[in-house]
Length: 206
Image (cartoon, rainbow, N blue to C red; front, side, top):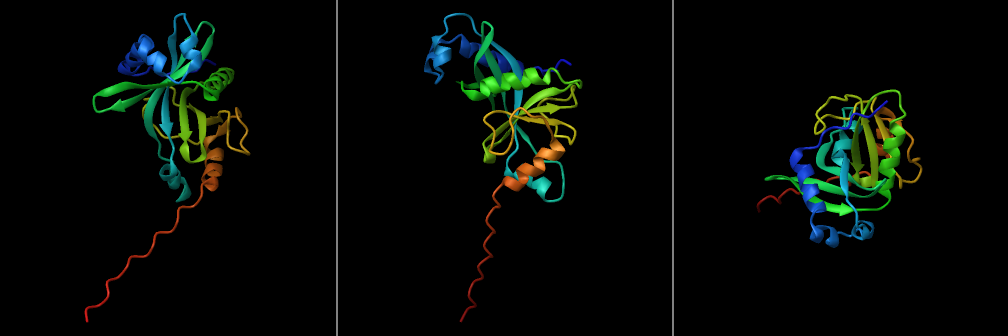
């Protein structure tokens, strides 16, 4: 079943297209593959990037409440001909969405592979990216509410998370996991925060 790719904010797309059309932006990017291409480049498959940090996972550990996520940007895959050669990230500023940077590496191919794999599922999903920085982990988040605002919403128990390669040790990449199964595993992997020191009491006056 086709994925319901959400539309990106128009300013975010415009900022990426402007960067692609800027020889300076492309030349200064740390992306040898992107700099070497002479033909046209297109920005496709916009994906909202949400972050699930330690604070967000603490909700789950503290009583099973939905984990909190926050939108940090939109990512576009950059196509040259019949292949994706890089990705572009955008970020939100007080003045709106702006281009952040180009990058290449394993997550570009991993994202494309996971999206193609998700196309074969019998249930429709809205694709997103969910990053877990403390575990150096990026997943394709398949959100069941296909018409939802891509900038909002929490991971539902029946949503699927597909770890991208390279995945943390012991977690198989490209295997879809229900949120209700994978997030407790990730929570247990986090190193507990150090206990807060007790407050120091002032000595009584002589």
